[in-house]
Image 1 (cartoon, rainbow, N blue to C red):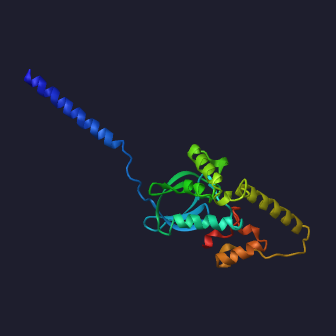
Image 2 (cartoon, helix red, strand yellow; image 1 turned 90 degrees about the vertical axis):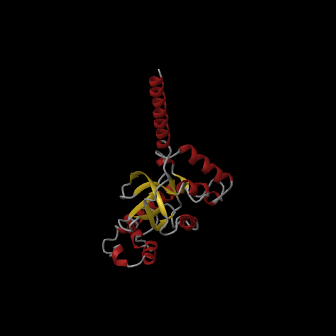
Image 3 (cartoon, rainbow, N blue to C red; image 1 turned 45 degrees about the vertical axis):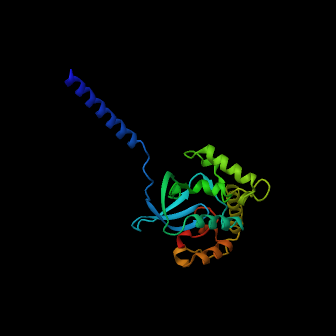
Length: 229
């Protein structure tokens, strides 16, 4: 009888140990820093490296859309907001959603436990990109954007918000297409074409872009030759 009791007690102890181990395994581990910020391109684009400082990756922040650099002053405000949250060499984790047609990693960026994408929406530095919200917490993004709108923060400082970046890009593409077709009517007219690597500086690239060299903006985000940063 005593032997059976001891066997039963041992079985209970083993079960308790197993339960504790299972419970501990369900606790989420601390978020590990997988990348370091190398540069901030604009209000929704950064470049990161591995923790060893190699293998640079361009990251397009998922599920949000910040004003383009040429949407003055909101584009520069958005970039400064992102720079304020992600200093150079800051350690971040990526929740990757996809790779876009330009080869950029589309991801939510976390600094510690802070979701930077959501923070930008909350502060009015960016809009929710509803066309590409899949894979993100729709309810949270909607709530944060509504809060920013009610407080008239950032892009919501004017009634209804400023022109949406996706509409702005569409308008620029239409204008550029019209300008190109007009230029084609003068076959005797020659124009110089530049390559980013030949220009030498990001600032010079922006000047050329404003002068009409729209082809320097390969991804249509209103900023030329981002690789020169």
